Image 1 (cartoon, rainbow, N blue to C red):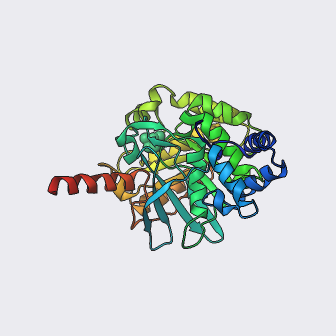
Image 2 (cartoon, protein in one colour):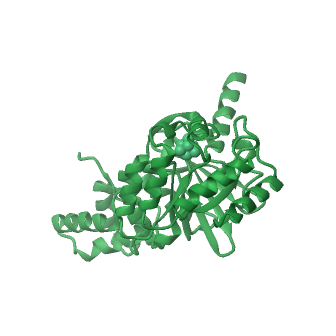
Image 3 (spheres, rainbow, N blue to C red):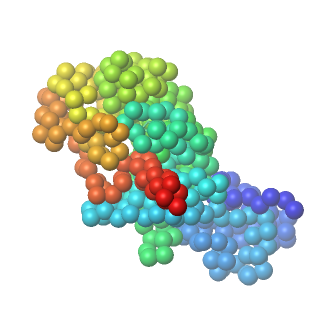
Amino acid sequence: MSARTNLLDFTPAEALERLKAWCADKGEAAYRAGQVIQHLWMQPVADFEGITTLPKALRAKLAEDFYIGRLALTTRQKSEDGTQKFLFKLFDGEQIETVAIPDGDRMTLCISSQAGCALKCAFCATGAMGYVRNLTAGEIAGQVRELRLLADGPITATNIVFMGMGEPLMNWKAVDKVLTILNDPKGFGIGARHITISTVGVLPGIVALGKRPEQFRLAISIHAPTDDLRARLMPVNTKYPLDDVIEAAKVFDRRVTFEYVMLGGVNDGPEHALQLAKLATDCGAFVNLIPLHPGGSQGFKPTPRERIISFSREIRKAGVEVAIRKSRGMDISAACGQLKTERTKDRAKAAATA
Ligand code: SF4
C-alpha cells in the first residue's frame, strides 16, 4: 500500500495539479479537483467526509491516497484582553504554540515555524528548549487552518506574524511555500502586506524573501545596538553580525521594522536609544519597542513603562519612527515558548509526585 500524501503540504496550485492528475488516473472528472481545493484552506473542513459536494464513494477513494493533516489542540488559554494561546501536538508528539491577538477588526495570528529553536537568544523560553525540528508547510499553515475549525466558532486571521516558536528563515523551504498558501486567493487569501516574517537576521533568508515579488513584510530582531551586547544576548550575532544585518536591511527593497525587546538595565539606556536610532536611520527602518513579557524572561527584568516611553522619545527625536508594542496576554503564558515550557514543567512535576 502506498503512503498517503498530506494535501496541506502543497501550495494550492501544486495540490490542484496533483488532484487533477489523480482524477485523470481514477477516471474522475477534473472539476472534482477544484471542489477539493475549495475546502483545503478557503472553507476548511476536518476531513474528506466534510466535502459534501463530492459523492460519498469519491470521498472514500480520495482518503485512500491523500489526507488532510490535522494538529491536535491540547491546551487553550484565554487572556482578559481577548488574546488566546493555543498549544498543538504534532504527529510525533512535539508541541508548538500559536497566539491569536484581536485588535478592533483585526485578528493577528502569531505562528510557529520550528519545534524549539537552535538560536538560544538569552531572553527566550523557546531558545532554552533547544532545536527539535523544522515544521512542514502543512504544520505551519495548519495553525491558521485549525483556528478556523474550532468547535466553538472559527478564528479567522486577517494578519499573520511569524513570531512564534523558531526562526522562520532557518526553515525557508517550508516558509516560502507557506507564504504562497497564506497569500494565494485559493489559499487563505491574506494580503502580503498583512504577513510579516520576523527574523534575527538570517542573511540568505532575507535575500530569498527579497526576491519574492509580493510585498511581504520583514521585521528584524535587533534587540541590541552594538555587536558586543548583541552577541551576549543573541549568539547568532557571531554568524550574522549587526553590520551585515543592517546591510541586508538596506538592500531589502521594502521598509523594514526593527524589533527591540526592552530588557531592564541591559539594553535600555539613553546611549542605546541613540545607537539604535543611528542604525534605523542608516536603513530607513521603523522601530518597534517590545515590553518584555515578565513570565518569559529567564532572569531578565522588564524595563519600567516610563523608561520605555523616554527611550521611544529619544529615538523619535533622532527622526526615526517608533512605536511601543501593546502588551497583550499578560495574564496568560503569551510569550513565545512559555506555554510549552509550563506544560512540560507541569508534567515533570506530576511525574515526580506520582
Ligand atoms: S527569540 Fe526567536 S530566534 Fe531567538 S531563540 Fe527565541 S525563537 Fe529562536
